Length: 235
Figure 1 (cartoon, rainbow, N blue to C red):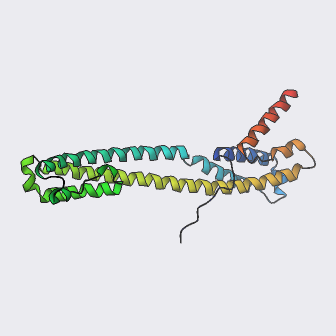
Figure 2 (figure 1 turned 90 degrees about the vertical axis):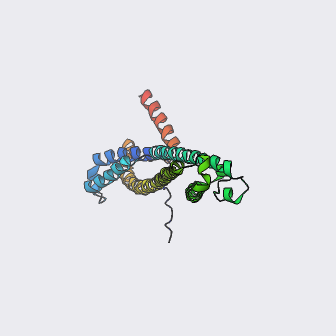
Figure 3 (figure 1 turned 90 degrees about the horizontal axis):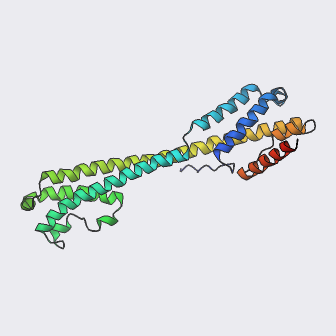
C-alpha cells in the first residue's frame, strides 16, 4: 500500500517555526514552575528543544535543490558526450550505407535529439552491439574498436550520472518528508506550551500572556514586530 504524503500543519517557513519554538521554550523555562502544575516538566521541555535541534540540522530545500541541479548538469553533460560518440560512429556508417537501408536503420539513431534518457542509453548500447557485428563491413570507413569503446564508455558514464541524479531527486523527497513530519511534531508541541503559557498569565500579567501568543503567518509576525517597535518607541 502506497504511503500517504504528509502535509504541513502550519503555514509559515520552517525557519520561522524554529524561531517561534525556541522563543517559547525560553519563556517556558522562565515559567517552568507554573508549567509543572500542568504536568509539563523540564524534561518534556528539553525533549521539545531536541526536536528543534534536529530540524535545524536537516539540510534545507535550497541545499538539496542545488545538489540535484549539479547532478542534473552532469547527467546532461554525459548525454551530450554519448551523442557525440554515437555521431562519430554514425558518420562512418553513413559513408558505407544509405540512411534508408536496413543496415543503417539497425543502429536506431534517428531522432536521437528527441530521445528520453532511457532511450538514449539503450540507443548507445545498441550502437555498440550493431557496430561490432558489422565491423568487417565498416573497417574501410575508419571505424575500429576504439570508436566503439568510446561509445561504450560514454554509456557507462551517462548511466552512472542518471542514477546519481535520480538518487538526488529521491534524497530531496525523503528530506522534505522528514522536515514536514518533524515540523508538525514541533508545531503541536508549540501549540501545547503556548496554550499553557497563555492560561498561566491570562488574568495576572498581560505582557507575559503576549509572550505565548502565536502568529499563524510570516505577515502576522511582521505586523506584531512593527507594533511592538512602535510601543517601545513611545515608552
